[in-house]
Amino acid sequence: MKRVLLLLFFIFVGINFNACSEKEKISYIDLKKFNGNGKVYVDKWGFYHIYADTNENLFFLQGYIEAKSRLFYMDFFRHLSNGNLGEIVGDMIPLIEEMDRFVKEMLYGPDGKSSLEKTLAETDPDVRKNLKAFVCGINEFIEEVKSGKAPLPEGYRMFALSPDFIKPWKITDTFAIGRFAQLALSAIRTVNWKISRALWEDNLPEEIK
Image (cartoon, rainbow, N blue to C red):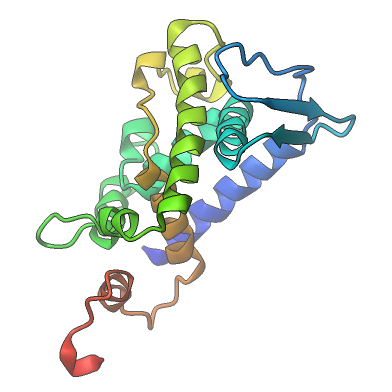
Protein backbone atom coordinates (compact mmCIF):
# COMPACT_ATOMS: atom_id res chain seq x y z
CA MET A 1 0.00 0.00 0.00
CA LYS A 2 2.81 2.42 0.84
CA ARG A 3 4.38 1.73 -2.55
CA VAL A 4 1.05 2.53 -4.23
CA LEU A 5 0.91 5.85 -2.37
CA LEU A 6 4.47 6.65 -3.37
CA LEU A 7 3.71 5.85 -7.02
CA LEU A 8 0.59 8.04 -6.98
CA PHE A 9 2.55 10.86 -5.38
CA PHE A 10 5.22 10.86 -8.09
CA ILE A 11 2.65 10.50 -10.88
CA PHE A 12 0.82 13.52 -9.52
CA VAL A 13 4.00 15.55 -9.09
CA GLY A 14 5.02 14.69 -12.66
CA ILE A 15 1.67 15.77 -14.07
CA ASN A 16 1.67 18.92 -11.99
CA PHE A 17 5.26 19.77 -12.95
CA ASN A 18 4.44 19.46 -16.64
CA ALA A 19 1.40 21.67 -16.19
CA CYS A 20 3.47 24.30 -14.38
CA SER A 21 6.23 24.16 -16.96
CA GLU A 22 3.93 25.33 -19.73
CA LYS A 23 3.77 29.08 -20.28
CA GLU A 24 0.56 30.47 -18.87
CA LYS A 25 -1.79 32.13 -21.34
CA ILE A 26 -2.78 34.68 -18.71
CA SER A 27 -1.61 38.16 -19.63
CA TYR A 28 -3.09 39.87 -16.58
CA ILE A 29 -4.79 39.05 -13.30
CA ASP A 30 -8.25 40.52 -12.74
CA LEU A 31 -8.44 41.26 -9.03
CA LYS A 32 -11.20 43.83 -8.79
CA LYS A 33 -12.31 42.38 -5.45
CA PHE A 34 -8.81 42.64 -4.02
CA ASN A 35 -8.84 45.42 -1.42
CA GLY A 36 -5.11 45.68 -0.72
CA ASN A 37 -2.22 47.12 -2.66
CA GLY A 38 -0.60 44.52 -4.84
CA LYS A 39 0.59 43.83 -8.37
CA VAL A 40 1.14 40.65 -10.31
CA TYR A 41 3.35 40.40 -13.37
CA VAL A 42 3.76 37.41 -15.68
CA ASP A 43 7.14 37.38 -17.38
CA LYS A 44 7.97 35.95 -20.81
CA TRP A 45 8.73 32.54 -19.29
CA GLY A 46 5.31 32.35 -17.66
CA PHE A 47 6.54 32.96 -14.10
CA TYR A 48 4.49 35.11 -11.74
CA HIS A 49 6.02 37.96 -9.77
CA ILE A 50 3.94 39.16 -6.83
CA TYR A 51 4.33 42.50 -5.09
CA ALA A 52 2.14 43.45 -2.12
CA ASP A 53 2.08 45.92 0.74
CA THR A 54 1.54 43.31 3.48
CA ASN A 55 2.27 39.62 3.99
CA GLU A 56 -1.45 38.89 4.13
CA ASN A 57 -2.05 40.52 0.75
CA LEU A 58 0.93 38.70 -0.72
CA PHE A 59 -0.34 35.31 0.45
CA PHE A 60 -3.85 36.12 -0.76
CA LEU A 61 -2.48 36.83 -4.22
CA GLN A 62 -0.35 33.70 -4.14
CA GLY A 63 -3.36 31.55 -3.24
CA TYR A 64 -5.49 33.13 -5.95
CA ILE A 65 -2.85 32.70 -8.65
CA GLU A 66 -2.03 29.14 -7.64
CA ALA A 67 -5.71 28.19 -7.85
CA LYS A 68 -6.11 30.03 -11.15
CA SER A 69 -3.15 28.12 -12.58
CA ARG A 70 -3.79 24.61 -11.25
CA LEU A 71 -7.01 24.27 -9.26
CA PHE A 72 -7.82 20.74 -10.41
CA TYR A 73 -4.36 19.44 -9.53
CA MET A 74 -4.63 21.03 -6.09
CA ASP A 75 -8.07 19.52 -5.56
CA PHE A 76 -6.94 16.10 -6.80
CA PHE A 77 -4.06 16.12 -4.31
CA ARG A 78 -6.35 17.44 -1.57
CA HIS A 79 -8.65 14.44 -2.03
CA LEU A 80 -5.69 12.07 -2.20
CA SER A 81 -4.17 13.52 0.98
CA ASN A 82 -7.44 13.44 2.94
CA GLY A 83 -8.29 9.85 1.99
CA ASN A 84 -11.12 10.89 -0.34
CA LEU A 85 -9.63 10.22 -3.78
CA GLY A 86 -12.43 7.76 -4.52
CA GLU A 87 -14.79 10.74 -4.79
CA ILE A 88 -12.92 11.78 -7.97
CA VAL A 89 -11.71 8.56 -9.58
CA GLY A 90 -14.48 6.17 -8.49
CA ASP A 91 -13.35 2.60 -9.17
CA MET A 92 -10.84 3.58 -11.87
CA ILE A 93 -7.92 2.82 -9.49
CA PRO A 94 -7.75 -0.71 -7.99
CA LEU A 95 -8.03 -0.91 -4.20
CA ILE A 96 -9.01 2.77 -4.00
CA GLU A 97 -11.21 2.19 -0.94
CA GLU A 98 -8.40 0.42 0.89
CA MET A 99 -5.97 3.18 -0.02
CA ASP A 100 -8.35 5.92 1.17
CA ARG A 101 -8.83 4.03 4.45
CA PHE A 102 -5.07 3.77 4.92
CA VAL A 103 -4.58 7.51 4.39
CA LYS A 104 -7.38 8.38 6.82
CA GLU A 105 -5.79 6.15 9.44
CA MET A 106 -2.70 8.34 9.21
CA LEU A 107 -4.74 11.50 9.75
CA TYR A 108 -7.39 10.36 12.20
CA GLY A 109 -6.89 8.26 15.30
CA PRO A 110 -9.29 5.63 16.70
CA ASP A 111 -11.15 8.45 18.45
CA GLY A 112 -11.81 10.16 15.11
CA LYS A 113 -9.78 13.21 16.16
CA SER A 114 -7.74 14.75 13.37
CA SER A 115 -4.06 15.36 14.02
CA LEU A 116 -4.34 18.19 11.48
CA GLU A 117 -6.59 20.22 13.78
CA LYS A 118 -4.00 19.87 16.55
CA THR A 119 -1.32 21.06 14.15
CA LEU A 120 -3.45 24.09 13.27
CA ALA A 121 -4.11 24.93 16.90
CA GLU A 122 -0.37 24.88 17.66
CA THR A 123 0.66 26.91 14.60
CA ASP A 124 2.23 30.31 15.27
CA PRO A 125 -0.49 33.03 15.08
CA ASP A 126 1.38 35.03 12.41
CA VAL A 127 1.86 31.92 10.27
CA ARG A 128 -1.80 31.02 10.76
CA LYS A 129 -2.79 34.52 9.62
CA ASN A 130 -0.78 34.15 6.42
CA LEU A 131 -2.20 30.67 5.81
CA LYS A 132 -5.70 32.05 6.23
CA ALA A 133 -4.96 34.74 3.62
CA PHE A 134 -3.55 32.10 1.25
CA VAL A 135 -6.71 30.01 1.66
CA CYS A 136 -8.90 33.09 1.09
CA GLY A 137 -7.11 33.63 -2.21
CA ILE A 138 -7.78 30.05 -3.28
CA ASN A 139 -11.43 30.33 -2.32
CA GLU A 140 -11.73 33.62 -4.22
CA PHE A 141 -10.93 31.78 -7.44
CA ILE A 142 -13.11 28.79 -6.50
CA GLU A 143 -16.04 31.19 -6.17
CA GLU A 144 -15.30 32.58 -9.62
CA VAL A 145 -15.45 29.06 -11.06
CA LYS A 146 -18.65 28.18 -9.21
CA SER A 147 -20.31 31.42 -10.30
CA GLY A 148 -19.32 30.96 -13.93
CA LYS A 149 -16.96 33.96 -14.01
CA ALA A 150 -14.02 31.62 -14.64
CA PRO A 151 -14.11 28.45 -16.76
CA LEU A 152 -14.20 25.05 -15.11
CA PRO A 153 -10.68 23.56 -15.37
CA GLU A 154 -10.25 20.73 -17.86
CA GLY A 155 -9.49 18.12 -15.19
CA TYR A 156 -12.99 18.41 -13.72
CA ARG A 157 -14.56 18.02 -17.13
CA MET A 158 -12.40 14.97 -17.79
CA PHE A 159 -13.89 13.25 -14.73
CA ALA A 160 -17.40 14.60 -15.48
CA LEU A 161 -17.40 16.74 -12.32
CA SER A 162 -19.42 19.95 -12.08
CA PRO A 163 -18.42 23.20 -10.32
CA ASP A 164 -20.66 22.17 -7.42
CA PHE A 165 -18.20 19.36 -6.70
CA ILE A 166 -15.51 21.85 -5.64
CA LYS A 167 -15.53 22.48 -1.89
CA PRO A 168 -14.04 25.55 -0.21
CA TRP A 169 -10.38 25.16 0.70
CA LYS A 170 -9.35 24.89 4.37
CA ILE A 171 -6.02 25.47 6.10
CA THR A 172 -6.04 21.83 7.19
CA ASP A 173 -6.25 20.80 3.51
CA THR A 174 -2.84 22.40 3.03
CA PHE A 175 -1.52 20.58 6.10
CA ALA A 176 -2.93 17.29 4.80
CA ILE A 177 -1.03 17.66 1.51
CA GLY A 178 2.22 18.28 3.40
CA ARG A 179 1.52 15.31 5.66
CA PHE A 180 0.80 13.06 2.69
CA ALA A 181 4.02 14.12 0.95
CA GLN A 182 5.90 13.23 4.12
CA LEU A 183 4.13 9.89 4.24
CA ALA A 184 4.77 9.08 0.57
CA LEU A 185 8.41 10.15 0.54
CA SER A 186 9.07 8.14 3.70
CA ALA A 187 7.34 4.99 2.44
CA ILE A 188 9.70 2.44 3.98
CA ARG A 189 8.39 -0.93 5.19
CA THR A 190 10.19 -0.68 8.51
CA VAL A 191 8.44 2.54 9.50
CA ASN A 192 5.73 2.16 12.12
CA TRP A 193 3.12 4.72 11.05
CA LYS A 194 1.29 4.60 14.37
CA ILE A 195 4.50 5.84 16.00
CA SER A 196 4.83 8.50 13.28
CA ARG A 197 1.33 9.77 13.99
CA ALA A 198 2.08 9.82 17.73
CA LEU A 199 5.18 11.90 16.98
CA TRP A 200 3.11 14.39 14.96
CA GLU A 201 0.75 14.69 17.91
CA ASP A 202 3.56 14.74 20.51
CA ASN A 203 1.77 11.81 22.08
CA LEU A 204 4.32 9.00 22.21
CA PRO A 205 3.66 6.28 24.79
CA GLU A 206 5.81 6.67 27.91
CA GLU A 207 7.50 3.29 27.38
CA ILE A 208 9.11 4.37 24.09
CA LYS A 209 9.93 7.99 24.85
